[in-house]
Image (cartoon, rainbow, N blue to C red; front, side):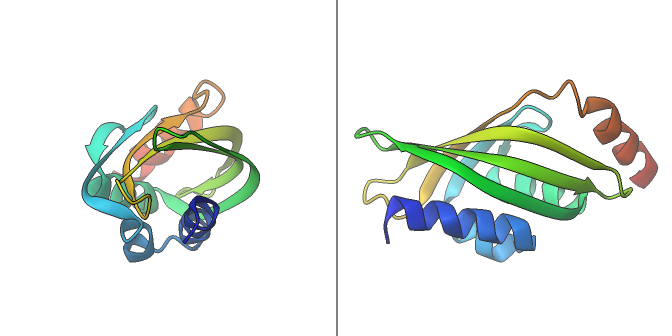
Length: 128
């Protein structure tokens, strides 16, 4: 599988909200660094994200691959929170790849949280 195919599978699994499909793309000990959730192991991060989500819709923009085993995936994210509020933003996910480039070994998510922080916090308070 190519790196682009791996990234396409990731966006598809994210859109479908399929925890098992997303986790299958990562090494079991992978971690995620997110602007809203902080640093977490991959499984609890995606379980929390999908728990806070009614719907995800991503639009692929670009992919940048380095020779050193990293890939940056740029996409537009329409995220419908559990309370029905929809937030939109541009995002870059920077993945480290494992040695054979078949799975992600870590993820750093980059986007501006300022426009969505209030809606995110309100949705989390409502679901608590």
